[in-house]
Length: 165
Image (cartoon, rainbow, N blue to C red; front, side, top):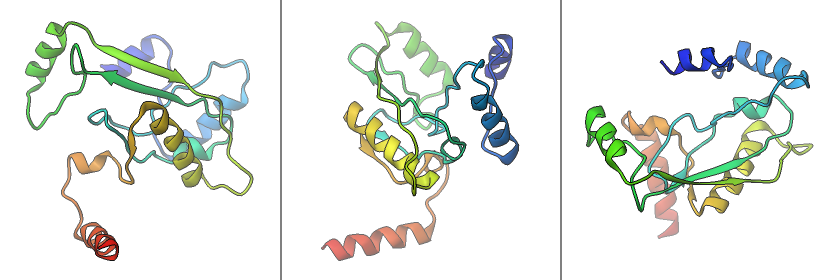
């Protein structure tokens, strides 16, 4: 349904693959086209952190106009914890909340530095967004919400913790 809505308003939808990256490059090269709105995390979490960005949108060149978005939970919580609540419960809670308040900060444009790769550029943009929203930076992506953590990742984190202690 989301894709039908976007198609209705002639919004282009890109996923992270080589064909899409080519199409995004063409899009940003055409100055008559509107900017592309990209959510590089690919998912939302509990409004306390910024997860790892997917690197594709940072590989294509062009100027990034970061936007920090943070929901204010005082009147209603916009986030759905699918492990605790059904979709119907979530929709009911949102529809009956007093308001969904969202703080939005438009940050200064950023460009990739000369020797910077896409991953480091994405991390730099992520850090600026997190700092503005008062959120922490996470080194992993949203896949951990739905999958078990790999043993190798656990072991790596345990080793890092042992070095600190």
